[in-house]
View 1 (tube, rainbow, N blue to C red):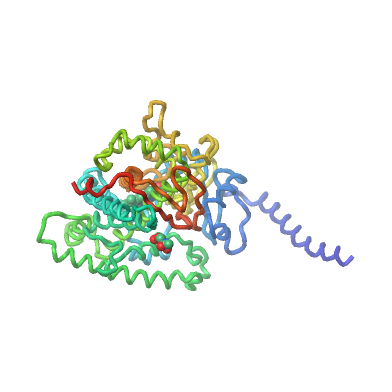
View 2 (cartoon, rainbow, N blue to C red):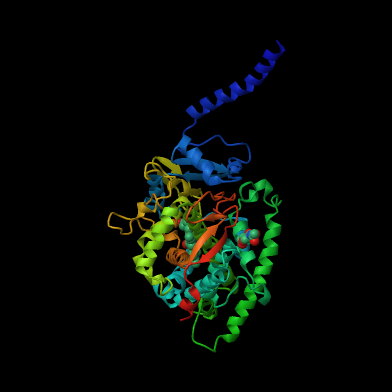
Length: 511
Ligand code: HEM
Ligand SMILES: *[C@@H]1O[C@H](CO)[C@@H](O)[C@H](O)[C@H]1NC(C)=O
């Protein structure tokens, strides 16, 4: 009896809410037709879904609710997109409407008021900086001019492996790849190595890692007004410390640039930005703060992503002896053994290109693309209001069984045709394969990233036999593929490699 009355006590409010809901939803004029989605929790909405591996959680939800889902983070509406068809609608049909990015408190602070680049709102400032970045750093011409930097940094890396290649010494490849990519970007943008340079007082590696983590963290205060000033996760405190140190180092480098300006003719990205900032008649007034934030954003967007692309490629190769053998045969027949592979060999290495694409399909290092709508729009019959956050789950899209046969298998052959020619490019027009996003906000660094990854991996397997995490490449074997929590697909464990010399790069790169 007691039990029953309790049950009734519970049922009354439930039934009333249920009735009230059906009643109101029938009578209240439906102004907006939002995509379906799971029930939201009070106050936090769906923020709990983002605690560990959002790409997994959102992929499961898509299986239940469909390719376009509504979620709320706190009080802010979001849409999750999980199929190639839906991605095409948002990224192509309604491209302009979704060309902005959500503005977070950390980004505002670290970007001296939202004046970075990768996370800037859509508008004239972003357009100006994007054009500049494309023409002065990432265009085909700039990349060509800056080739010697990439070659030197890769050779430095190969020589380091070579010195350790007695078959006994272990190298923390995760660390060394990060240093190499960081120094490439750092020399390309400001003519200075800033990774592994603690001794010179300009080390930014750890700071860039920390800034990336802060920018990719979901800050409760951004979504729930009540908590805005409370810094519940301690992000604000970390941000201030990192920002201050980063700023000091960048000030130092700016000063160097200002001092040496008159002396030689070779201009790097920072020189060009400083020139614009001094030019009264420039189209866009740049402050020194903006320059620092802009360059920092290029590090944040370009270093970890590219280094991780290399790490995941190595991880997949060491699991697959058949594939590493075919890759090495390709290099030996195209490049031979009398010189080290070069970027200019890439067009003749379709199989290695396919390996890298297949890696980015399974491990897109930015697992989810973040955008924000700038106007109301209607997509597939759903109303999407302005200022809605957009998550495009490119991890899920790359594993969509409607588009990929045996999606979980690592099969580079999908990316070459029967004649061995490369297939499915990276321009973002194949909506089932979007590791670099698509359209005007798509990754401007993809050519650089692919050149670096393909050449480095090719050179590593050309010069060395690899033993990674205790697995010899000829036998293959289990390797820990655990992904660390978060939106960026970091490996949970660093890759430790024991290189065994196959041909000695020293005389080859010295000549
Ligand atoms: C494997 C390596 C890389 C991957 C997987 C990657 C992936 C991405 C993705 C998914 C986006 C968002 C695209 C979108 O919203 O449609 C992006 C944006 C961006 N990436 Fe990359 N990226 C890589 C390397 C690089 C490199 C090497 C650089 C520069 C040196 C770079 C610079 C940027 C910048 C500046 C943005 C923001 C662009 C904007 O908002 O206009 N990325 N990247
Ligand atoms: C290897 O490098 C990674 C990435 O920099 C670092 O997090 C890790 O602690 C290093 N591990 C070892 C065993 O040195």
